[in-house]
Image (cartoon, rainbow, N blue to C red):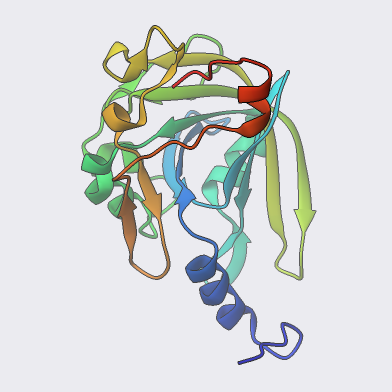
Length: 215
C-alpha cells in the first residue's frame, strides 16, 4: 500500500501518524493563565531536544470552541506567561490522563476535574502535579507555528528545575529507573502502552573504550 500525504486528509494523516509513530512519551502539561486559571492537558507529540541547556518540545494545536478554531488553553497560557510544567505520568494515572483530554471550558481546571493534586513549583508559577513522580519546570524559549492552518505550535522550553521522587531514582546510576517509573506511553486511537520486558544491548563503541554504561 502507498499513501500520498498530499492526497490524504489532515484527519487521515493524523490517525496514520499516531498509529505508526509509537510508542510516544506523554507530556502532561500544567499551565496557569495570566488571570490565574490553571490548566492540565496531555500531549504526545513530545520530545527532548538538547541536554545543555535541557530543551524539550511539545506540539500543541487548536481546537474548535464556540463555533470557531482557537488555540488550545495550554498553548495560549504558555504564550501569555512564558511558563509551564511537564509532568511525567506513570501507568496508574491513565484514567486521569484520558479525562484531562476532554474538551473543558477555558475557565474549568482539569486539575480539579481529575482529582489530582497541584503543588507549588519552585521557579515557575504553573503548578506541578504531586501524583507524577517527575516534574520538569520550564521557561518558554520560543514557539514555532508550523503546518497548514490552523497551525500547530511547537513549544520549545528550557527545563529550569527538575523534581524527581526518590521512589523512581537510581542513585547509583544517577538516572531514572524505568521499571520503577512504569511510564505510560501513547499509541494510536484510544490505545496506551505499558513499559514491559526491558532489556539492554551493550554498545560496541562503549565496550571498545572500556566504558561501563549506567543503567
